Image (cartoon, rainbow, N blue to C red; front, top):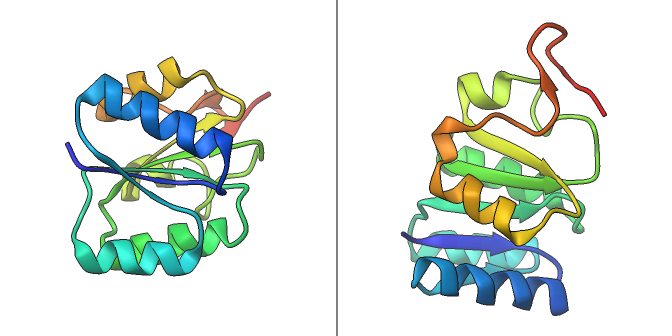
Length: 133
């Protein structure tokens, strides 16, 4: 499984990268800026992209990835309660995107990567089509 993790440089990125590599026994690539994402996608495609939406240019990273591959599996880790595309459930219906609230334990990230299509976003309410906190 080819995984790209996008987060700001530092301890959290290195820790998540190391734990994902250990869990999946694969090399996990990392990016910390929009330019890194451009370069990563010139090298190839990914099975799953994990992005901390709170990084600088986080939304532009998501937009760039969706331009290249609208069906890219993206796990967005975010503190925001709004969705990264037009409205809730559009992520699932029109793209292969899920979200987890940050901070989130690495075990939840691993669980989502393993069973990506079987999970919905954290705190999603299908009746109101919104995230409830």
